View 1 (tube, helix red, strand yellow):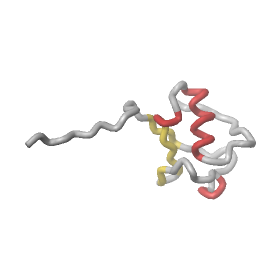
View 2 (view 1 turned 90 degrees about the vertical axis):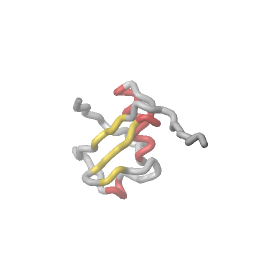
View 3 (view 1 turned 30 degrees about the horizontal axis):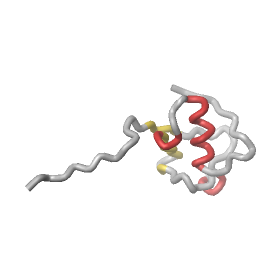
View 4 (view 1 turned 60 degrees about the horizontal axis):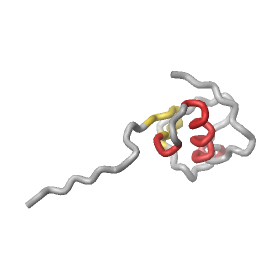
Length: 75
């Protein structure tokens, strides 16, 4: 799926981008991961610091799991 998105002027971080994307693709931000070029970006990263500019393509990876599951080996 391809989504064209006009980034709002106040959107400066990856977390803010995920918030804006969540409104369009109907998934919560905690289930979205953003990749640019060969790097998976952190929520606190600034888009400009990572070199993301107008007309760039970022990749959105979605997670189907919203909780971490711990497996404990019984003795």
